[in-house]
Image 1 (cartoon, rainbow, N blue to C red):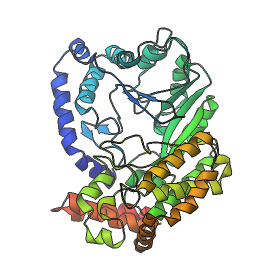
Image 2 (image 1 turned 180 degrees about the horizontal axis):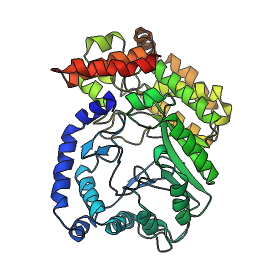
Image 3 (image 1 turned 30 degrees about the vertical axis):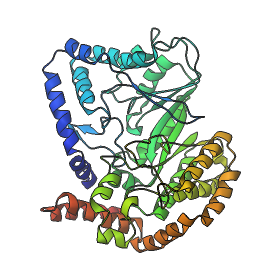
Image 4 (image 1 turned 90 degrees about the vertical axis):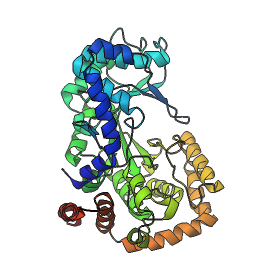
Length: 434
């Protein structure tokens, strides 16, 4: 287990305790009693701006990468689903362990309670949980309830889309899924995050190898489905330029792997993430301030300028991205999440850049984006951005930056016993530096 797993487990400890209490209480109930307690639950519908489809986020057991033996951790940039309904996830998990058929009916009900039975052809339906081929979350009984002959879609939509972890994908599971969906017109979205395997697993805590990603892409294409790869910018604790470089490296590799679409995710600052921990505990840290990682209220968050610059460089490097590129989670979670912004959260330039990116994605005309990249350099916020870029040069390489940030995170989490943790972390760092 990597040190990042320890870090995320510690960050999530308060939620883990709540989860365990709820699960233990539910485990004392019988399956029918749990089902009746939960049958009113509705799935979430995530509203994306046009032209993107809405996301049907089913009530399930939650992310089994994040939940291990009742402890919650998961990817360092993600608090998806667990933080929204911790108690309910625990109770749903108890039902899943007691009665798989009732669990599948509950997943279906969460859809029906929100939308009913679909009796006309829709466009793209994103129907998902956290990992749609994880046996605990999406056993075959769920596919039968949702997509069988008496499922919620009485008429097949034009296109299905599902989120699946690369390490959950194999030929047998794909064949099972497509047996219910039918062949063709299905997108499978996988979280690549970055193509640097060390950063993905030792720092993002994804626990997915390059080989698993490449195998998954190959299997998806062989099954006649399309591959949508998610890529991040704003990896916690990295500089703006390092984030851009990682993003471009990822785009280049994914094009080589012949994915059908790349979705660009500029990260928000969310509760129970590494971004948020650095912000709440280290935004005044002298060592991180010296290299521009700690930056007051902006700590733990990428700049809008960085997002625009990354996209512009990607289209210069790979013109064929046009029509095969989207932007996710950029401006939809206006609530507990803090969105990417420039020097001042209230500055008009933030909204202007949001609008430009939205229009570029709708029209697939990159000309305005490229022009905006030049005009934004005249904005008063851009002067502060350049000062930050200059300061962050002191951070050195990605390996050096992660080493510094990791040590400060460890000291903040374990002030009385950090030495052994840092020793373990330094051993992990040797493979990144090599």
